[in-house]
Length: 275
Image 1 (cartoon, rainbow, N blue to C red):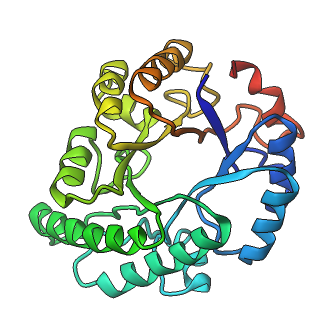
Image 2: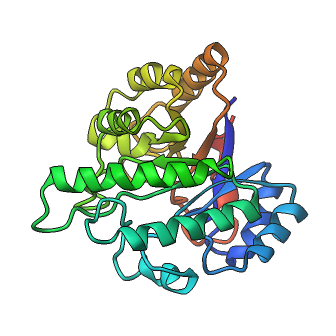
Image 3: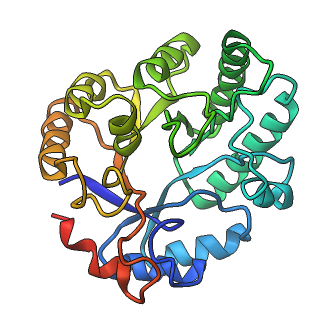
């Protein structure tokens, strides 16, 4: 079955962040991801990964800010990335460089650069040109350390105003940049909400080599993948089938909100969906 990574920003929220690594390992996860690492000293994260036999598989570049402190607060201040924002190129570059320093320390092979919210008064074409230019630069920087850069289409219901929403546009941007280490982060939750036809899109896009990571959650409540309208057992078999045919070796990130919320042990009790 697919390799599942626990998203520690969503799972085990009843525990302090650094305690979630042990909980994930105890539940059998071998990989972890999360939104942002910048509130933590990278040495503390390395210690938790090593102590629990875990691989860091993904985290996001800062949603804004020029250093770890401002990056830590940017999300709560409403920032959702700077990649498509004209005039914020220096901030974007500082964020990518910070993310790559963390990626090197954590031996993490990929970072996600959030597109950002399309600014008022800026045309789609202008925002797209800024986005493509920034991604070309980020991919070139990341290539020096053997790291992949990911972009993710996100639905407008959860994140109103987000610039990138559709799989076809994400793949077109990846092809336009021409960087082999720029790939798509395909979140099946967002894909189902925006456009549906998830199985056909997996069959079409996985063989291209342009999908660097997959994420899952139930639709529409974003709970466990056995709650909601998507048939995940079928999708897991499909991912396995296509991966066997194409050699895809990516991870499937569990980015969902446990239905039991902050109940002690709630994440673990909700893992019966896992094959």
